[in-house]
Image (tube, rainbow, N blue to C red; front, side, top):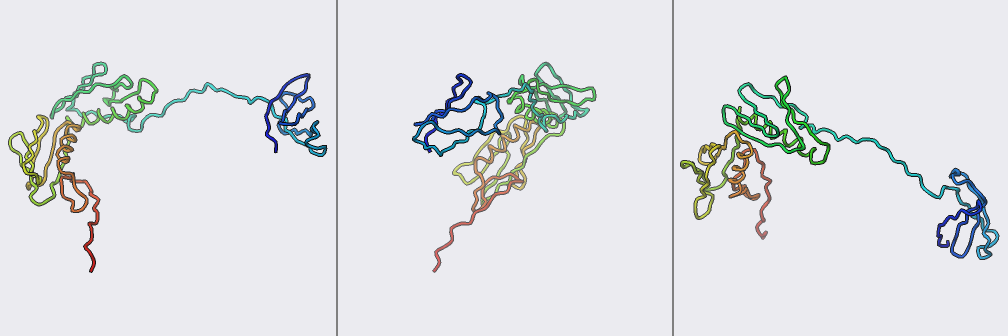
Length: 256
């Protein structure tokens, strides 16, 4: 079929459809005629022949585009909209975007970004609310609700993280404010224990890190594990107590 170059020209109530090598003139039709109406016409050029009839649907030359002014509201985070219960032995001090939490185990502080704010209800619960409807606000909503809850639980109950040493000759001891690890290196590994943390070693292979700052506990435990991560063949290394190490099958000996 011929290459069709669609160009509609409104002149004297008629439309002209140009093809390569043939000019086809349609009868006068309304500008907004229904697309279901079909007209037959015969080309004026003898090149296409007298018996060739073309059917062209009478569609409007321009597409109609509609715009709506509907406001799209972002959904609240399932974690962010949950209230935070404050125990009776915890004191909350809120000044603008700065929060201070004090309890029997210690004191923590946190500064909120401008996308979220902390509100204290009459019932005593805390709620984290978004101040704007943006993508970053959705990200900060659930995050700072979790951080606030960790602060309240940390200063009242505390957190702990347990590690296990697996391997022949692997052991750990606490010497003053240092954690000494023997992990198969030519020298022992000495780590300074932060002031807010407590480290206890049981049976020379079980380490318990406790404190009121959950993020600091997790960071110190991850640093200990980083010295000798568990390998997948024999499972040797430092792992968390609830960690599952996926084992691999070693190379089989040569079959005779």
